Length: 359
Image (cartoon, rainbow, N blue to C red; front, side, top):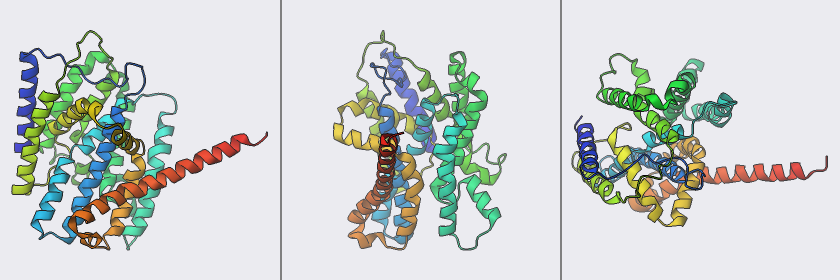
């Protein structure tokens, strides 16, 4: 509650600052001035994917060295700092979402089918006493591997959008929906729905992330307003982000608290700070993270296999805590990316040969 309340207070102060000093600011729009897709969303998606891996790397280090306080609290700090990841993934998934022909076919081919294959193989690898009932339960709750809960969560949002798209895409309801979803999300974060909803459903409850989904849809509907003067608000967002950073250090290093994935304000601050600072970053770095964002499904589905196999090895055996951490992070991002590159090159090679053959 304290962290959630702190976020709301800081967000209120930030909004008050912009209002008092009449600093014009609008939601980031999904297209650039050249009417092409804004690559900063891919960057955010890539950063979120790396953040999800960082969260699980902390669990890996804690599994082997719970008594090594300095190392575990450092990995906990990095994990807590990465708690923006799942909300931003939800948000960026909603931005370009549209109900059109082949809506469910694309979701089946690009998400549900790969998830199904990964879940079945993962279940057979991870567990020894196989039962069909348990596999079905784990599949629908996303419990084969810890991060897999995100897929049932996302599928629910896709279903929600498919049913209510006429209201969600109607700009007349945008402000009301955004406020209502914020209140629902806040109520869920404070645990008011815990006694109502089944216990097994808590981890995949869309009420924990409904605000980010609605916000993503609203961003997807925005258009660039050329009448709004360009303003530099990096200092404002940067100041509040530093305050957040201080409390992340405090809660991680002193109180050793493990944050939730669905805090409301921190991901929004992170989103706005990165949005303002990204144009100033090195293009090579930003392109690499954008590439990770474009191949995030491979990392999301395959990295749990990598880190599960790594539980046979002490992370310190890879050169101590520092190099062990870097090695673990690089492997969990690099191996899925390598597989993605191999598959994509195989597809392009097959297509070039197929279309080159005389009919």
